[in-house]
Image (cartoon, rainbow, N blue to C red; front, side, top):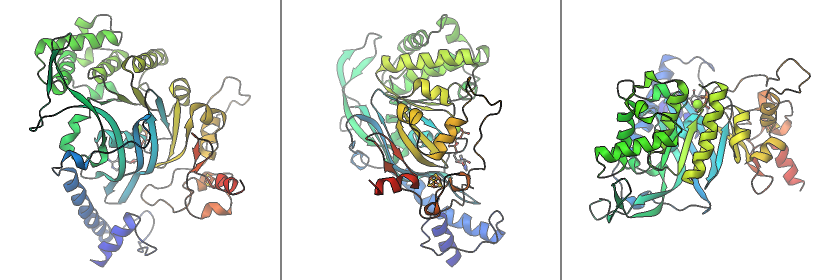
Length: 425
Ligand SMILES: Nc1ncnc2c1ncn2[C@@H]1O[C@H](COP(=O)(O)OP(=O)(O)OP(=O)(O)O)[C@@H](O)[C@H]1O
Ligand code: SF4
Ligand SMILES: [Mg+2]
């Protein structure tokens, strides 16, 4: 019992210095694994209960800190409870997405970009993957509801014949929403475009059936004709020249670029206010990549929405983003406007990322690389996670993890080099 308590505290970083002694860094005895599983099971059970509870709307209504934002992520912690220990995939993340802005999230593989987006969509694979704590505030337009929870019709009908319902603006804390309430937001207000459209589309249904389903789910009272009209409109909107043919086609009959356009059409069909695009162009060749990026940019203005663009390609970020968030090992280490991050990068990791970008005018025939590896996600150190790879570290870097320093109204960096500067005024 004692070892379970100690392991639970250690796994969640609540050890207060009472580190339990394991037989090594990478090897766990079967006794330790059993103790970890037992400790994990308790926490997972509590979090699953919280996720599946029935709750009144007032429990997850919230308020934006800044009315200009559409999404505010505050101190988000998303963990995976594995038999090797707790993977703190997202570890105290803060950032916001203003209205009508594109925010680029960059960082190397495994730094927590996708887990952040999956947390926003509440698509984490439970019971192992859980939002442990934090807030994800989202400004939504939801239907006004009567006493039974049904949307209230205005009595009017839209151009395509669908009934129109009264709406109102509400701020939801997505992290606190019970999972059965998430339909109010997921797909409808926040849509997601994934990296590989072939694995996101269902191979046994036609594109039309899959597109129509989005309208059926999110538009109360939608008929087959209304759904088809909406699907055709969306296919035309994303630049598909023969929408009737694509509507009847199966996913395998389309090219990669066409499939990604279909995914975008699907994401747009409920007029989302926020589109999360997770590596939307990685699986495409460069010419199609440019077309898809143009399309995303154009559509963002058309729907008057915002984009959270996840990519490891700094070129894509430079072209698309208004703001950039740089992540490293589950934490945000620097964020600012695209101009600040590209013209005045401050964190040694961001500087390294910029240097590793291939350029036409480089004299060297070798690409720059940042030496070393990201620390083991199960046993993160207490000090700066970049220390082992940093060429600028000082004695202070062995101390506590650096706090976020504000260097301009929009530019923040977590590095001791700037905590010193701040102290010196
Ligand atoms: N189901 C899971 N179980 C355990 N750990 C997981 C799981 N899914 C993700 N992780 C861990 O969470 C961390 C963040 O993963 P994530 O997928 O967010 O990385 P990423 O930044 O999107 O990387 P990439 O650029 O390769 O897509 C990684 O350390 C990963 O190993
Ligand atoms: S805190 Fe120290 S080790 Fe970490 S990035 Fe800054 S200088 Fe490097
Ligand atoms: Mg990813």
